[in-house]
Amino acid sequence: MPYIVGTSLPSTLEMSAGSVRSSISTTTSTSEALLVTLDKDDFRSVNYQVQAVQGTNYNTTTINVVHDGTNAYMSEFGTINEPVGISTFSTDISAGNLRLLGYPASNSSTTFKVVFTAIK
Image: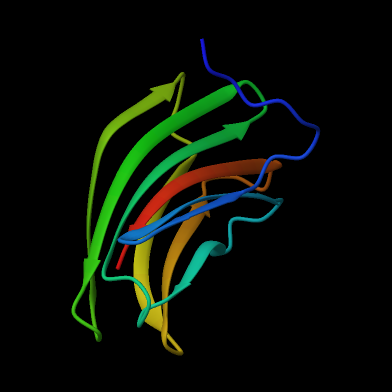
């Protein structure tokens, strides 16, 4: 079985047609949380796999996004909330960047882990 050995693994895998990356962020507010930002000129579409954890509440969801340079369009699917939903999501384009935003349902500490594939 193939495996990777080492103490430091890269958080980005660059390929000719795109990139695979990851991010982790934590917030203690119900305010908008910036989860991922990408230069809109570098990538046209993105597939995000998101995990959100808040205490003993766990969520996972998949979000697909494509943009036309001005507007971002998203489809969220495959969502699992255990036992309750703890966040909603949106995307937009701001200051030349394609952004994934999270909106926690409570002020409790919420950690977002995102693995995403961005396509040029």
